[in-house]
Length: 436
Image (cartoon, rainbow, N blue to C red; front, top):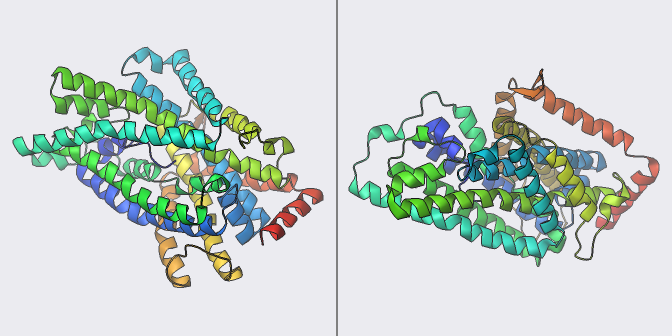
């Protein structure tokens, strides 16, 4: 749910060069991923409920903010999920450029969404098993790439220009891409009811995954840097270019390049598939509380909220025409606001319910919580302000990202007022009492 391998960080290298990208890949997990993983470890082990972060914020801050948490997460998911079919199509275009253009590109993206919807209807175990195999398959070509990079560095002297910033690149874009590649740790919380021994499993999984993802990104970027591949050659879909340059022609070049193309196509499918598992549980939990139509809470024999899965997939298919950069900016801004509420719920629950059983507890008292919360919150504020003037285009109409995000936030507050008649409010209050 966080990473499908190094696919996607090519844009950061192309925008900021190797030296600054490697610095970002090392520092961002410490300031952004690790605090979030620790927060998820404590809250998921204390409240292992379907709906995850929606349940945490509702219990810590009340139903209004719980609804806003779910609204922001689902709004962010619309822009986040549009990125993965686009990533798959960009790699398929290496085989046939016509697949990425016009109606063919749209048909490919819709086909991926339909495939993953059907996959998710089989249940969490089916998605989990295939995700594990996907992870192995995606990383094998990069292990070969790392070996080629090390061999090239040992036999060819590196030029100092290798580490320079790309001409005309944008450090802001590079940082946004790195943040996007390192976010999503809380998504695993929504399926806690379907996880064995969640009190122990979540903490171990979070900490191990932060290390593994960071190692994967840093190792892959270092490999192409040591191989002397110019940073300016790299953009979305260009790992295959780096692989062919390092393999230097011949059969190995074709095999490695083809493997990375296939892996790039698979990573978009794998990420979309896993995140469908996560996001669909949020409207199902909201429907159980009476905020959304009851139909969204219906589950099939495998325990899957199938109406919610299908509804979410329809929403994700509706924004597939946005540019990559705009999708990332909107995704990070809305996700960041939802993350603010999660850290606020972490602190509120420590104050309001100090005796809540916490199989894993972040070390320290309130000072420790504030210390780990500050770096992610500072990054979120920067990301929102940095993108405030970038336009979101609807035909001939251009709306600044900050204004568009503000409209979505305001819409969530309005929808809450409309979706909260007395009967639903009482059911939500009863659910909170049962949780207590």
